[in-house]
Length: 448
Image (tube, rainbow, N blue to C red; front, side):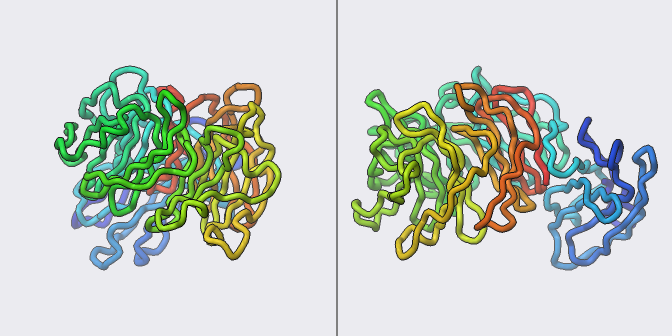
């Protein structure tokens, strides 16, 4: 895409992956449609030639309050949308002459991202940051640098900051209110600043409490205002009940422990000061779910459904949907090597009582697994990747679920195969879900 100040022409450079191009092959698009989400410019249409070629001639309307906005390119076969892609939301008024690629792929597909090799990592921390970059931290098997990917140019950014190798193993990451990221392992910490790509130890009075020096593998839950919580983890004695609170200013404060020791539990923020914590418990007798809210009496924090097989599962995945519900996907029967046979729909509005928080049970996943990663994508799809299958093998299927009716989710089965342990999923502002990790040199996009 060429955006020129004072010009009225717009040219597209479309990146279509091998095996994922909607402009060639069976069922290919017959029409390309360019849509600017500015509520001002009418959608533009162009016929697609047999070789996949098409052109647009578009007059952009300047001014208005819609900036920033995305450019969306749709591939249509008649009235059917067969593929699409989008830029991040850009401030077009600030762009000079430049090429902006749009990555277009078939709907409901998983294809390799076009930016080339990435550092092999297991379960890295992934987040989109300002100016349309994606950062990947931790999880590397060898000494590595902070890795940043450019969503606008679909290319890696060069010269990532060096970080201590200690933070490539079992580190937890929280973003501060100033946009910096704090990596924590035990009572060690490192702060990475995206603004100048520098990594340094925090001030002495901002180091994590010394009492957590022996704890690794804590689960980080982000507070949107900055900072958040570090939940559980493990030490030499096993799963930990410890919870640490990090303020948005990078300072630590004391808070109450979990009711049950939990090693790398799943967790969701369900209110300003309330979390839903699941799994990771040390024993089969400990309940799966815990409502972490320090204003609650301790005796009211453990959640029991009374349903057989629900209250003793671990290594599950939590993902929030719309309409106040969440899915608990997969997992293992606590105290056993057996995988659970079903998945759970949880009514988050009923956690405080007055109605049943267990809203439904169903086999939403076709491949039973534990320790998977799940993300809610654009188009009301939940994408699930990675984890361990029955018998200890890798769960190879990338599955998707239709949650357009969030209280009646439907499993759609496999949409691709990535037979790698340690994958993570992250929703991006382009509308795609990034799948990375697995100790692989590649990353992948899912798009509905």
